[in-house]
Length: 439
Image (cartoon, rainbow, N blue to C red; front, side, top):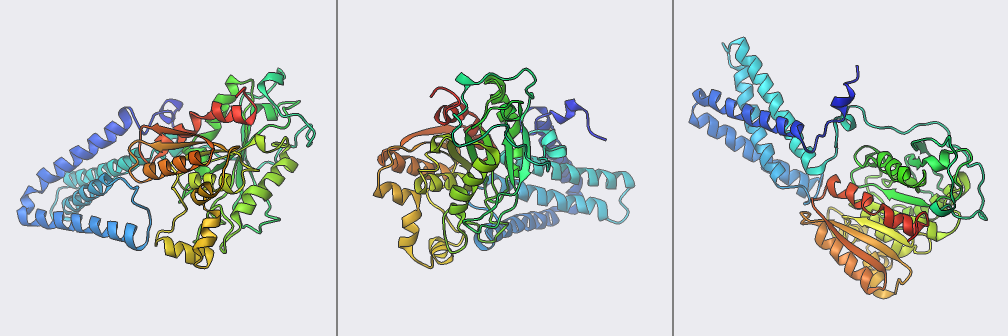
């Protein structure tokens, strides 16, 4: 049974619901501390040492051995984890101690659940991965239906724009997200299916032809589905389309993981994968042929991404400005990285050759040659102490190379608070570059 619409629309990142989860966690920890006084100071100190030690071990394992995540993880989450572990130990003693009344056992279980909910809430507040109850319990999904064929398409068709488009009266009110395989004829790149958003104007009968294309790259870890669930891309693009007669870019969200390869590709051509060829040759050719979109040339193409995807967007723009002359880098790095260090990256992807890496690395390319036709926006989070300085370096390098580039700083850290707003705030700019709106 699905929860009511009013419940599904509740926010998990602001308002009363996250406040309630956090308050319940605080109350639970206080109650467990008071109820655990009879355990004695020595036992509670042992619990505190175990909590601190296990959290320190998590830090070492996650950031220095297995590299589950990087230093962008908010350090406050380690403190919350330690408090939760302390509370779980106290709750276990409440539940497992011989002779404990049933009511107290039940209260111990509920307290542990409250702590777990509060800990999950703090993680979600840090990244805004699930913005609403709906995104968690009833997330949007793509359809596996066949992609609609455009009513009229061809390389000689004029580019669609708001100025020359008149929507038919029965145009759909919303776009649709499809799941599709994009073949890798030139690159041999292995890939999970891509997600493709088609706007209302495309789905109309007759539909707009030769719409522009926005390629969105997800983060690491991640998948195209993150744009759908956490980025709410369909909702965002439908909102844009509703203000512009149903027009919006065709949005292609490819798999950037190389079919979950342990060594993720770098949106470059390397010994691991020719992912740049896939994204700059295979994907555009397929989109033009199968969807009839982006057929008016490079001016109709843009690439954007967040975090790992932001780094990818810059790499593709710098190496293939003839394909992607417009880019949006949201919280990307100043260069591709490997968790084990720069030399490990060279060894894994470039046979240890620094020059081979520099040939394709965007910042190095910006230093070597001018890019007067390239335009981009670099978005950084004000509280992102890791990626914000690197984004500024990319901006400075691109500007020095003659690119028409902007730097935007948004409130927030390395999270969807910045990633989603970074795209939504620049839709008008992108659509001006792509020809839907007057630039």
